[in-house]
Length: 233
Image (cartoon, rainbow, N blue to C red; front, side):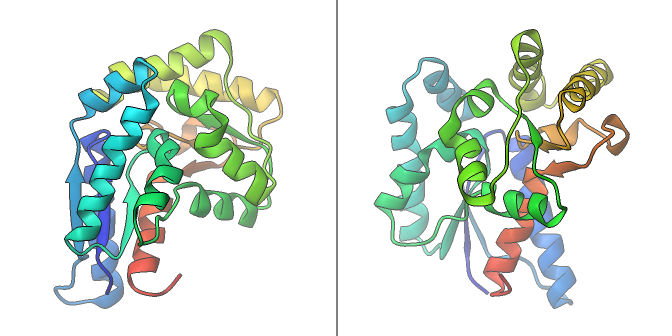
């Protein structure tokens, strides 16, 4: 079994879900008292969020690189970033370490294509929805997916709920209903699926909130990490 290096804390709510999935799935596959070999570098999300909001992306990249190098030095065999938005640091990390980085968009894109779908709607932080290089370009160029995003007030609401509620452990029925309405509008615009593209969104939404399939980036990423750590990818 390889050792997983997790860059987490963005937010710790979803990092805890990663840890749960990793250990439960390893135990399920190997049986007995087995659990995942994990090294966790958990950042202070307030510091990262402040850099994002100030547009200081180079400094945010540097924080991610520091975490990645630290994990490599203490024995991680590969890395996962437990956050969609901070996959903007992918190139910087890959240039700084000698171990693989398992990109969150790869298991996501594979799952969408396997389902025969091609026009997903992306919900996430405003950075993830707006910045093409975080996951949208990856999905378009590697998996030929045409990604839709909310616009205007809908985009603002999705981002506000992420930043003011979900990362603080608040999962409110009113916000869930508002997300369901936004999803319905995106389906009306042609979306054939929904990407829960913030690692906390799966903690809010339920299957009945969407008329089309929803893809959980947290679960897909964690399961891919289990495949990788056990040599089953």
